[in-house]
Length: 235
Image 1 (cartoon, helix red, strand yellow):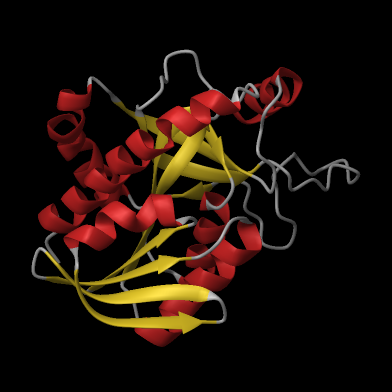
Image 2: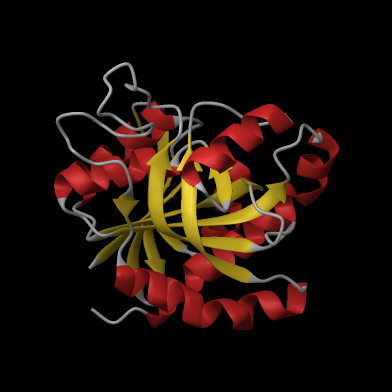
């Protein structure tokens, strides 16, 4: 099986790139794609760019051009729960697009996608199990913890308490970011198993200094669990 790994920014893929034996590098419609080996397994790593459209296009490209058997999205996120701290990792159980809104139609809930009939995209249980089982060995040295739960996605960097409280009250996510549910949506349409791994770089409260200080730590924590998934996965 070929593992597809997606990160939005260079900071989110640099650790995995350093662990790969890179055999080929391409730029495809603005997406940088590295293919090669990690832990003896076939891996394709892509830097998709920020936001839902970039993420969905990249996912479809990896499926169509590289025939990946699963997708792992790795990166950073803002905490949406008081028990989820800086450096901690959230392993997705479900993904939702918090900015998808057709509630003008009375039967639709926020995040519900009409005619697809999906509100929450469910991550692959086997991948989630592997990630959670191996998380403690990765995070213990960092003093961080792993959590399983809902991740909310939207084309917004959440940076004020009003937005944070609104999203939290409606969707009950553990964290919020800008690509995961779009990747989940594309995987759902293609019947491809997926997981989203996000480490906490900020508290979704507008403190950009926290983000600047923690982005590298968070990205490494997320990437380390991604590496563990590939190492432990048995096809």
